[in-house]
Image 1 (cartoon, chains in turn red, blue):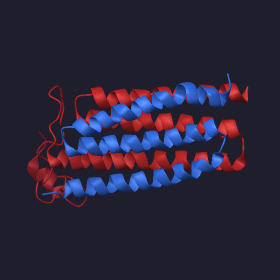
Image 2 (cartoon, one colour):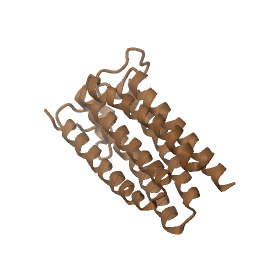
Image 3 (cartoon, rainbow over the protein chains, first blue to last red):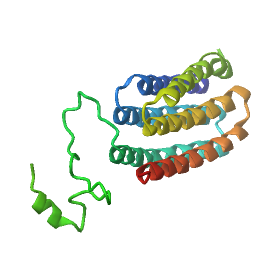
Length: 130
Length: 88
């Protein structure tokens, strides 16, 4: 029972990580790739470490696995947001099929401050809503 | 079918294929953020490989390495993002 559970968790997690690998190769745009790999690979890591915890069935291993899962789930969105913001400010082109870019023209190119961030309420009123 | 057998026979080869896919993006990747995303995915797959390797060799000590890799890959990604943003 425990072995079957461990095997199924491991196979599910590996499937998700393989999907992330295919996504980073096939998707057309850095933002789509980042979104896919961050979410899918985090899920894959979670399942794989869960499989390890179930297989060893040991307090030390389980606490390590839970710590890694919690840390990755906390940090993956933060790092994805940082890379996405840096890529956007760096001028990486969006996919030509993109239908909506709500940030266009709203970042100050010098200071990298977003119009309408807290404390800059006046900027929004002057720029107006498109 | 034992768990280490599945881990060595099926799971580790698939993870190795994923490493190759991420490495292709790291080598081609038209812009610098693409390469950073690929490095991030490589570290993530690395953590997963370490977890599966711990099962395959029946040595749970290896999981400590996974903790360190998780911490360092986060710091590396943040540093890369910081310097991409202030590059010009």
